[in-house]
Image (cartoon, rainbow, N blue to C red; front, side, top):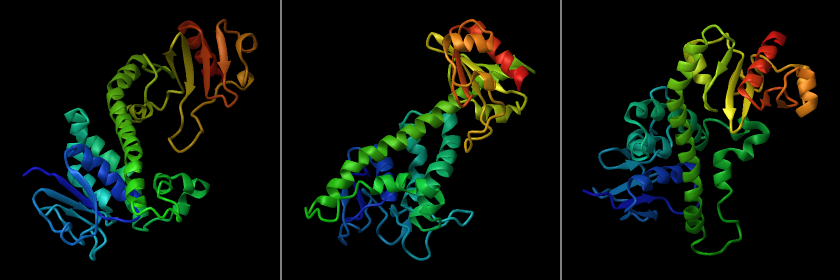
Length: 304
């Protein structure tokens, strides 16, 4: 039977059911999304998916709540929120609906669950405290989505629903952007691995365009590589390689004498005709040709 009714709870909203709604409304665009605690509305039916409300986790009945006891847990005993449950059962179909290549769906499903869904689940269940983000805690996705709730003195009887439906496309943009980036990273793997093989023992990786590369470096065990070069518009860039996604520290910095220089001053400092720019933090430099950027990369390797 066709799903024509999606039901979550009324009142104030949280990131978990809002993000669940992103997945389900994409899969069932013809369905009516209702926010309700009415008993009849929460009665299971073949045409209905109920989530973050209903007091049960029952796949057959299409109820995906996590507030009951015992609450549903992952294999590692970390808690699910409604988002995690919906992603577990509908995430692969959602990725297919976004035209993610079939060969990449399993990997992207798992990665998205670990990097995006799980933090939402943990925060919603109080398994981690928002303070773990330090001064950035108010800028986490749950906090930003929560800031879209109506203010306390908005007395409109539809304030909560209005805010929820206004927040839905914003939440959708974050989910779809994250998926697009994971899919792009999967597409880039082949290109980067080919470039690594072509570079051999060289500490300089040349790519045909800017693209994600660090995971491919790790996969290939290319620890000897220090810098990446690629065209960008009419120019070429030289980039340092971060040690990880959690730090600005690099395997090697660009020469200190280049920091913050541009054009003629950088040409003089580097000795490279066509050198155009070096960031003061020494993680990127720009030149006007492939020959110039490769010469800058060679000098940077020697300096490192």
